[in-house]
Image 1: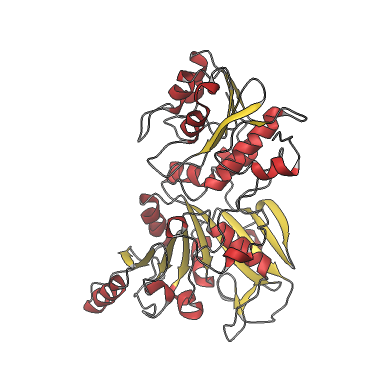
Image 2: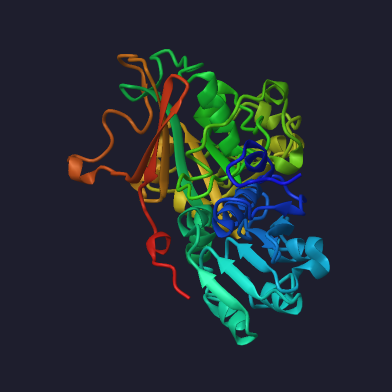
Length: 438
């Protein structure tokens, strides 16, 4: 079947892997549509490739037919370009490759993608953005041009760089990209004075939250949240599966509304798709009867405390370990709790590139106070609680003056049913705004 850019069939199939021989030339821009398809593939791979970046690639032959496509696979497996080239086979010769990140030029766990592109006979490559990794940083494009391949850089760069935020942060700092997420009333409360919090946000917002969980490497909460809410911290919404529209600038991770999927929303996704669950628990006092300590959830749980050298701490560690929970210790911060910078170092060493911090208030305050929040995703419900628990810190904490507040850049506002989602950058990296070079 021939699919025209902009048709409902074309938009739906654009996000699905392993579909080739699709005509994209009829009407509209081949370049724009094909790159949108590549960005869709990259968005679908988020949370499954770390510490490698999630990349999408599409190959279109001279007749305007998609002959190959693919996305980065799990770490140590094939990158997006070889996946697409394998699908295309001999049809890649004299074709155009659309790829969301510059092909790599170095030997790592896999051979250089730039060499594979040249060997396949691709004559034109359209790249969204250069690689922030200094081991690549333009070298992949130079390798292609040296071999006589025509290279263009910059199409879809805004979305591509947003998708690369976790990878770029990890490359620069060896720490994960931190997203602070919470749902609050209009007066900034996440629970009543008695601790009741279910549910401040509506079903659409909760579906969105599970979709975000499905595309990050790790989720972090404090022990207080475990005691109060007994959360599972799992994703119960599989891949968002939403195609990136041609010319779209929305963040595919945070600013996309997740469609209702009642048939799958009630069950956990498989373990391979679950983010790492992280609990900050200084003295390892989280209940052994909690879901996170039960050993029954898919995926892994890591509890980070501060080892005080006592027999009690060692005993509690052993009890958690019997439930399949991994326990690690880091040095204390000024408040005696695990130092959040050290926690990020620990996670970065494990290859975690994107961390969703879900609270509670004390944990959020610690990350903001340390200046370690990169982005905020706040769901605001149309209600006023008039007291209760704040989303961040306490009434006695925080800056003395408004000049010390964290103001968001690059803000976006999205309706999620009756709720309002506000996202923005606290620390917007220069790499995100650099003009495309090449």
